[in-house]
Structure formats: C-alpha cells, structure tokens
Image (cartoon, rainbow, N blue to C red):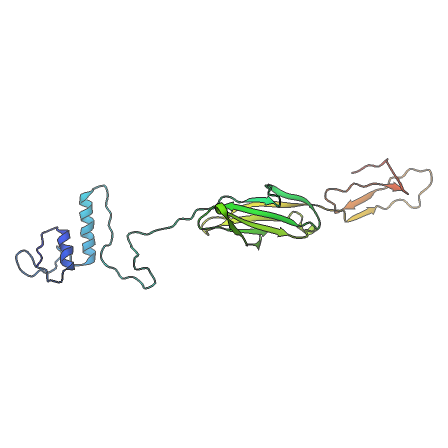
Length: 243
C-alpha cells in the first residue's frame, strides 16, 4: 500500500518503483489522471516545478527517468550533462638552423650543392599537434618526434640545393584541430649563384690603331651581381667602370 499526498514527489516516485498497485488515501484504486504524474515526461515536469519553487533564480531540468539508448552509444551517457573536451592550441612554432640558431625570415645565403638542415619546434597543445614542413605550399615532411617538456620537433633535410630553389618558401606548421588555422612560421631561401653568361657586346670592326674605343661586357644569372674584370693579355686593365 502506498498513500499519496498532493504534490508529494518523493511518494510518487516511490510508488512508481513499487510492485504494488497504487491506492489513494481513501482506499480506492488509484487511476492516473491529468492531475497526477502518469508518465516519465510528467514526472520531469513536476521535478522541474519542485526545483523552481526552491529557488526562483535557478531552474534546472534534467531527465531522470530511463531512456532508450542506441547500441553504439555508451549506456552511461547522460542527456542532461555532456563532457566536452576542449582543444588547446600549441605555441607558435620556431625555426632553427643546424646549430640551434633562430631563423627569422630568411635562411642563407647558401651555395649551390649545399645541404640544408632546419628544425621546426613547438611546445604544448592538446591533443598533441602534428608538426610538418611545406615547401612552396606542398607538404614534404610530416615526421615529427615528441621530446621532454611537451616539445615536438620536425627536422627537415633538404639536400643539394640548386638554382631552382632560390626564394623557395619553407613553412613549418603545427596543427591539432581542424577548427582553427595552423600555427606556422616560414623562411625564404637565399642563394649565392655564379653567373650563367659573360658576353662581350658587338663593337666596331675592324679596330683602328691610336683610336679610343668603349667595349661592354655583360653578365647574367649571378647573385649577387657579378664583378666584371677586364684583362689585356695577362695584365688587368684598371680604367674600367661597373654598371
């Protein structure tokens, strides 16, 4: 037997859990009506009303009755509360040369045939970030290692650089979520390059003795600009000008 008093939520819940048929205080069999909770949704509404009466400034309503749960969802899932694990971005990466010196904006100048070694380093981040190298926007190396102190590094070796690598953009990215843009740092490759050509421009022909002539030599393809030197036989000519 279970006696019910109006608005007695605890007794309502106790009766719902009991194997006995609920009865009213008058002894007659209890029939659910609109004035008494007869379903889980109505119980929820009454619980909400109960909480609201205790505190006018705070009202929280949660589903306390049993619910149907899909087989692929954890049975401990609570629809009233969810644990959302927020991501923490890593620190902005830094680029170091093979000697551990910070590179800022440019790397070099280097000579053709040199091997370049650069290290991209970032710290922290949750989940652990991916650290990768891109050259001119294309991913070339995504192998990184996690060291002590939440330090994550990716070492790039770019062998036997050539003229075509001049002004190449090397970008290091650290990323641990698709929701935000990658943290990145970049350097531009500077090269020392020998001249590709040295050409004497056409002059009057034939030359006449005891007459002054101006002869021009042009060079192309060097970086920095080539220094042009004139010789007459084995003797270096001094009266020249560079333009």
